[in-house]
Length: 179
Figure 1: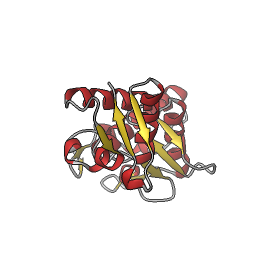
Figure 2 (figure 1 turned 45 degrees about the vertical axis):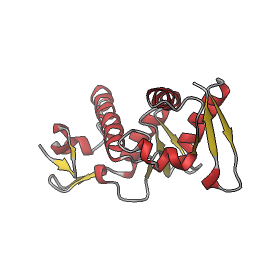
Figure 3 (figure 1 turned 90 degrees about the vertical axis):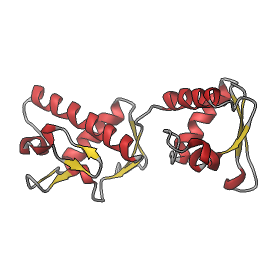
């Protein structure tokens, strides 16, 4: 089984036709599904939130079989994730894509569970503590994209589960949880 760093690649990754968009509808649907799952799994395991179509991305080529995805194939697979709500185009030209291996609602649920399990109800945490603090090491929250985190916290705020407060700089923005 081939690996990309510590990530175990699926068997289809060594099958050259999967690096070419398939013309038969049923085959393409299967291909798109496999690539969507692979992209989400890889991004989650490596904590990658943004994929740029203009830059090299490790999954999009396989030197073992000497194949790379075309620009069109990359767009098709990312667009499929966007259509499913698992990604969002960051720019109007559709060159950068925010990957949501957890949807915003799922991130909000994850944060709420983290708060409850760790006794942070009625506690204040800075945004940076959530992203890089000791408390979140080894969790999905470690290294979370700032924009994704803020959107999930705003969702919790709308539900009355958190209160976000702005500081004078990004370092002192915080949130009080009332789970």
